[in-house]
Length: 419
Image (cartoon, rainbow, N blue to C red):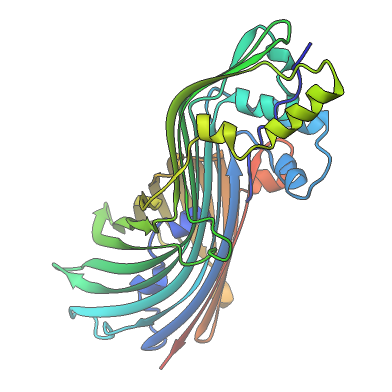
């Protein structure tokens, strides 16, 4: 047999406190009433998946040994379509409040400097099985590699904007404009792909209709490889639910694009490739085979021809809608968000917020959708004179039961107001 062996197909998985970053920060919208100026800083990291458990992801990233137990954890959760998402976001922002007179229309202004990284993958079960079990079990049949999509992007964002209070009555309207500096980008889209392994191991055949885009890979060009712009929109209006007061909010964040420089790589081809192995009858054949394999990109030029040109890509854009009803001792929020260009399902959630003595508050959220399907989120906040600290833990199910669920997230925010 020439080639029943493991096929090196590596899924690159790194690590959204999505619920908080899918909508505008409350400190920008609502004046806490303790000062005219506010300064804030935040950071959040989040990993979640419908199939890749927290235990498997942690072992993989740390370079640990992936044994059969780890693989079985994932295999038991695999479906026809599987999802994985990761984000790392942090930044600083400042707000100027002009709505200190209640009932008067005014404009609050804000500026923010942010760093954002996103990785999201959609993949069929055969992709995982090939990567970690090899192709021996596929002898005489084809492994389905599609639909497969991977998006990986990182960029910096400078945003300026304003929120109009008492817009058309008691409604509020906000608009933010951002300038983007693209750092890195990779996109792989396999709309049709399969790998056939001959029943007797004589050959393998790869068929694919693939698109690949990547930002400038020239050494020393890891930053500022592209420029772009984006818009944020916010609208909220009060409502009555019986005798209870509430607010409905609609928001759109990061509606924009990045133009990557002319050294960006692109590949687009529908092709088929058959590999029969190398026949060796003498040392001379082996030497010639080695020389041929080292010839300059011969295989790439024939089957994977890369070209360089300017590329335009959309950044992940989030649409969010939620209602927040005042129930007296607590607030009840029902919401939904969806990430465009993100391989995520729509996310529905129910959240309760409650204030306690000594300026403590807490919230608990139950959700369905996104990357991990099920989600539990908990957060606490503490007001200390003119300062506030917020701490949130996302995907509690993936932290408490890491061998059963995939997900872990942490968010922290510090706020301070000035007279």
